[in-house]
Length: 258
Length: 300
Image (cartoon, rainbow over the protein chains, first blue to last red):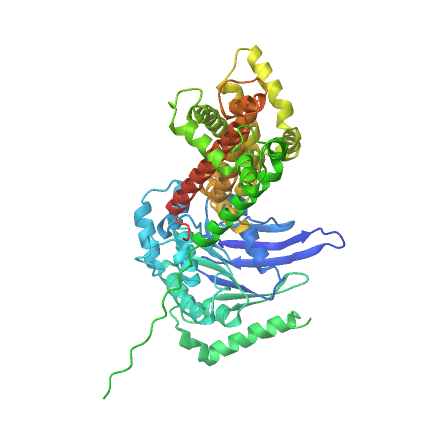
């Protein structure tokens, strides 16, 4: 059995500003196993997006160690180890849906593009929208295109930075359900940043509770909910007690104070 | 049971036509022009009125029909344009079509060269950090030198090594029109959002791929805006390039001859020809813009 997909030890990221240094991440330790669905939850400024960006090599830690697939984040990025989904769809408006999904394939020079595009558009339920331009789609559909794009080159690791943060709750529920089915079917490892407690509990196999100033990990919760769960699970006592524990963690990290 | 009442559909509101207001403005300009011709031409008409019978009808007849007026009336310019465009052979030196073509050809060469130079400079500036600091001040300084001061030097220097006619004029056009293209394209090539650039970084895309798949497509609207400015000043550059050497062909030459011989009507006709050319070129760039953006799937 190979080692963990992501392993961070004593990881810190300190920004030097004019008056005082800002501790975006302070001595963070984390293990993500193959096939995990890990959520980072916490208020703004707790470093959850920063941590995700460090994993993706879009940001560099100032001390500590981190490996992705046993490599440095930079080596992993150069090997195209992960697909990244941003807070906004970030689609290229001059490309149709299929050409947006095909963008990473063009850049990486992968073959089988039509088959990969078709398979991944079907995975996010967007078959029939291949020729549409982004402006012709709703916000939820655009974000699904960006998920198909992140999956197009078949990375084993999916990094998602508040992908549904800008969507309304009804659309978000639906996409959460679809994402869970996708995770169950593809057996990917997913790291997911959110500030919604129900979303984190519903989706995750492991919840990482974070708090700000300095950005640090307060609690790591294994959920042990069944893999093929539906939205109804949110009314069960197990779900509510998990949500309660997340809230307690946030409270312990002074996340509800000014 | 009675049938449900039909559901009314709100009609699509139509933009009211704006032909009428445009016509009114044009008419107002013409009226002001005709009226202004009376005092402006008084130097010429005054003595005539004093010598032979006065009266309003004579004043108007003199003011609007002088052979060498200070300000020609619009219909005089229209007649001169008609005469020099349609009644003479297009290759004759009396034809404004001939002179227009001479200016247009060097405009187009200068415009193409200037646009290519402008895009190339912008790409260099966006990719090499120190160029932004080291090149930009020179680019801006180049545009603060009056073109009328530098044009004779360009013509004389190039003439002394055997380049005359189209080449020096095109170079002056190029010198003027690369500037808006560089400025617009630097803005356009840096217009992609951080997220769109981060996405390319996660793919480990090369600088070349980022340029052609992200920066360049994102800059297209900026490019066309710059090209509209560039094509109009390329024409100005070509006309200015025809002035200092007393060139014998081109709109600039026509302006110069007109001023030598006091042919104000001829000057104005040449000016109008230049304006028509500029308007047509800007319009053509606009057509290319609409076509390109539609091909790129931009929201109509």
